[in-house]
Length: 203
Image 1: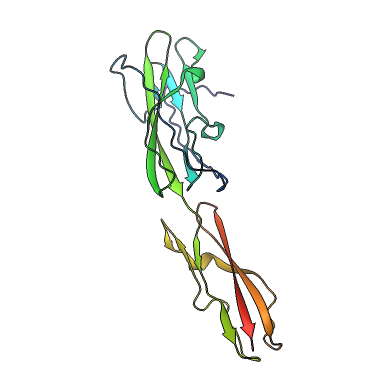
Image 2: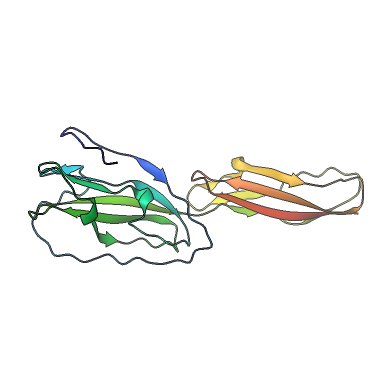
């Protein structure tokens, strides 16, 4: 439900948007609309009686990006005439490329029936799962195995995140010759998790 803003209200919020990596990358082209007046104030919450609200959000690398999807929470309202303008919202700019990690922007516009309009520029961050580097190993029976040594976790934006690296599961028994597994997991600041399994041979 739309919440009407007062003249002193300033809304800022963020939402984490995670999409399945199995979806293919797609660029969404912006609709082109003519310039109707010079009332553009990007990033402002109100202009000439029009309220326009949209969330800043994150999208996973190599997924489909739809600038109009529900989690973005687009709302627009003509406060002067008490009319919901949400159905009138259009995308006027969209440079999001989900094939590359980085910061992008989408610009939304709401248009009132009398020609007044308002735009808001929203930041979109394309993020990726962490990268875990770990190699298979061979050890001698009865020796200790350091699970974390020579294992690293890396995030394309944050860099080294080894502090968030954990051993999720392992059946290793260093006293009995055989082949065993070790599964690592690491999560980044955006809630994305990666896993990697290596094999340890005990001789």
